[in-house]
Amino acid sequence: EVQLVESGGGLMQPGGSLRLSCAASGLSVSSNYMTWVRQAPGKGLEWIATLYGGGNTYYAGSVRGRFTISRDNSKNTLYLHMKSLRAEDTAVYYCAREVKLGATAYLDYWGQGSLVTVSS
Amino acid sequence: QSVLTQPPSVSGAPGQRVTISCTGARSNIGAGYDVQWYQKLPGTAPKLLIYTNTNRPSGVPDRFSGSKSGTSASLAITGLQAEDEADYYCQSYDSSLTGVIFGGGTKLAVL
Image 1 (spheres, each protein chain N blue to C red):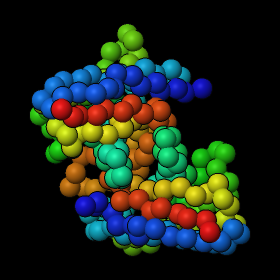
Image 2: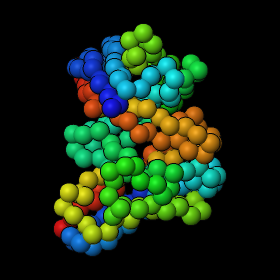
Image 3: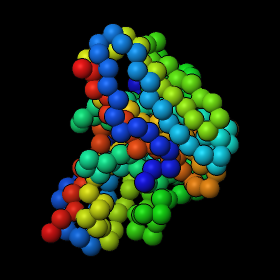
Image 4: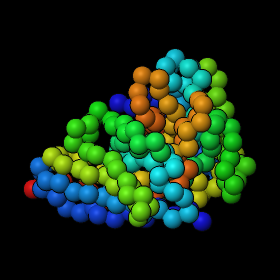
């Protein structure tokens, strides 16, 4: 059974830094496309970042230069390092496994979500 | 503003059929990229309902079906049940971007 368990969320001040973790079981983060998606209060889903199995990383314009996606293969854990946090980064953050094949790209396994609140 | 356009809300009575549309462009759905649908209940993670336009993951009732034509896609739900009340999101990919794209979401109310 695949499980993705997130941790690390909390209340942060603007300009602060935070690291989210996504511990995986039942799949290998090193051999899958792994993605972070967020949902701000009252808003829709927003793609944030993807880490390819080969190591390439891609970011949404709203977080590029401030957020970094990475993984620790030995811990089978995906991370999202966030810095220079803004109020508009307040959201529930989800990690997910992305299936990417030809013209298809979808998210089949999701974590439970981790709430990040940025407020002074 | 989302790259994919969905109606903000739809509604239907129990037992009825409803459809939710998802309109894209020539750079995403119209370029041949597949469309997926997710069900989102408050406080829970999104659940994959439909993948590659028409396919249901194991465990998803056949009351849910998807279709795609041109630059648009649709999710149909037949035999509406109270438990179907949720937010529904379409998702695809865009050749000008580097990640998946979502519609703005549609809130389904079961009257």
